Structures are given as C-alpha cells and as structure tokens.
Amino acid sequence: MENILSAKNISKSFNGTKVLKEIDLSINEGEIISISGPSGAGKTTLLNILGTIETPDLKNDSKLLISDTNIFKLNDKELSKFRNKNIGFVFQFHELLPEFTCYENVCLPAWIDNNNNIKERAVSLFNDLGLIDKLDKKPATLSGGERQRVSIARALINNPKIILADEPSGNLDSKNSEKLYDIFFDLRNKINCTFIIVTHNQSLAKKADRQIIINDGRIV
Ligand code: ADP
Image 1 (tube, rainbow, N blue to C red):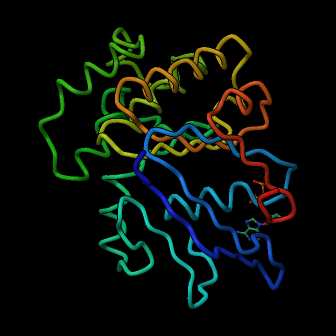
Image 2: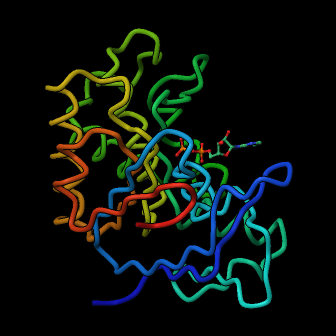
C-alpha cells in the first residue's frame, strides 16, 4: 500500500499551552482512519494541521508530506492551490453557502480552480449521493442528512485524494449517521479515497480501518 500522508514531530501551542505534543502519524492511500478522544484533547487541531489550514509550531525535523509534497515548504499561494486540489473537507455544520443552490455549492471548489467543465461530474455525484432532485434547491430547504451529503459532494468535486471530516455525524440521527458511514466506505471502495474522521461516535470510530485515540495532545 502506498503512503499518502506522513506527519513527523507535529506540536502546537496556543497562548503558551501545548495542545499537540510531538505527533507522528503515517497514513496509507485508501485507509479510513478515525480520531477520537476526550473533548479538548487536540483532535480538531490535529485535523486542521493535517488539512493544511493550520500551521504547527515548526521544529527542525517537523514535516508534513502529503502525496510526496512537502507542505511546510509551500508559500501561501501554492498551499491554497494544493489544498483545493488534494483535500476535501466535510464539517459538522456543513457551511454550505445559503444564497447559492446546492449545485453551485458543489461546483464552487472546481470553479475556484478555473475548472468550468465539471457539470457531468457534479451531476454524477448528485446521483451517487441520492440528491439528484436537489440540484437547484437552496441548502435551507434540505434536511440535515441531505445537506451533509451535499457537503460530501462538494468535498469530492475536485477528486481529492484525502477527505477530512470533523464530527460529520454530529448533527445527524443514527439512521443518517449509518448512511453517512456507508457512503464513506463505498467511496473508498470505489475511488480509493483516504478518510480521516474526527468523531465521538464510537460505532463509526470502531468501524474504521484504524482507530486513533488522542489524549492530552498525544496519540495513545
Ligand atoms: P478537540 O477537537 O479534541 O476537542 P481541539 O483541538 O479543538 O480539541 O482543542 C484542543 C485545545 O486547544 C483546547 O484546550 C482548545 O481550547 C485549544 N484551542 C484550540 N484552538 C484554539 C485557538 N485557535 N486558540 C486558542 N486555543 C485553542
């Protein structure tokens, strides 16, 4: 199996308090990883660093390689481009833009990348996720589970290698949570996408290929 992400000596402090402590982590392509642990343990901070939206405290040998790209060597512009192309994000509160249709929300990351030729791909994602009748609807008219699936389509539009999800089922009932997990596993089987999922849902955490538990800023 091919390594897709490798993190070495990742630490992070906020206001002098160390919330992540010398994390080393290596992830293979197509792996589904769950990250769980008590509130305040550093899970979201770690996810944000792996997603390149937060910078750790850099030590000499700190390193983050994603698909062989050395993240800490990129400038801001290169980093935004890399992130938009390679990493998809699924958040608990969706963060879909309310004034745009579901179709527009899903296409935005591609349009930002100057890729205007994605209608077919977008429609096929809406089909795969059971959302084809929602294309022209505004997010506010959808249920929580449907909105979450739109945010998955949005995360997938640029064909990213890695999907990061922070409490993706936090707002869903158990039936929709199950459905969401099935979607993640189907996607992995279909397109060999890698998933890193922060969750306090124990049944999902246990289903993952590998369960990582964080306590007090360290992997235990
Ligand atoms: P978890 O996701 O495990 O609940 P977080 O990574 O969100 O934990 O937070 C870990 C610790 O870092 C918490 O004590 C939190 O208050 C603190 N923290 C997180 N982000 C910030 C920030 N931007 N500024 C200051 N403190 C932060």
